[in-house]
Length: 393
Image: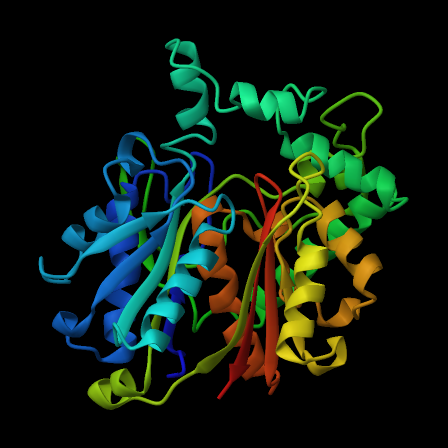
């Protein structure tokens, strides 16, 4: 079977809710990343076999197959197809898996895996709440309710608090972790470690005002942050530990990677950045929901014939601080190798775009630190988790 290689990776800097990317239509923002991948790889646009894009809230401006709309907004020709994927927060990580599987099978040679979420323009949950208000029913069917009779709703917020209880965590630990995420993101930004991965785009405000300025710094980073400020943010529920300060930030953003096989490498005439070494996806308890990266990591390492110590860097999405903290406790991984440039608590979590975003950052960090193997995992709605292990080349 053929190998799958990543030859280009790019992301926008994250934009805060109502911030510097909120004026971008998500198809147009995605197109900026697609164009950047063409530029960075030097690929003839016509050789791209498919564009697979992750997006969670596929309604409004993100409806009607956002991947195809992104293609039509980019320099790619009409002949390039596109399809959209929803595996919740792991959508663009799953897009990467689908792209890798396509080129490994030999049915395609050059595929772009990408993702986008404009959480300013298409608020999280819109595709669930509006149909319910219109009397179109609830996503939890009678059969699901029968299977989970004590569950009114599968909730990530409930799951995050369940992790706190199960792993003996408290708000102080979550807040301390959140501070470290901010500090690492600040350090990485000031050291220019994100410069090579970020696609500069014009900052366009929500009212359409074009600022004429390039957006190149993740807007969610709190450069003046302090532990006291984080601790001062009240929990989302009385008696809880999860607060807006120790959870991922609402974010606008897009990211993508170009995936090829050996024929694709020859056609493009480029050297690969990384090789896809292993891919895993699992289902787990949908109630606690966010615990799935733990068994997924164990399964991935076992199937890959690897040990935790073989991995140089880890990216575990910071949906809530309790997720990486529980993962660290369960796996025994080295905190110094986890999310070394900060995570979604500081940088933002553009839902369907986060999988490709984290992979872009992981490959870049492996290069900067002369690492070989990187592991990325993501908790996902419904109790799912993807794991991708890459080898830097």
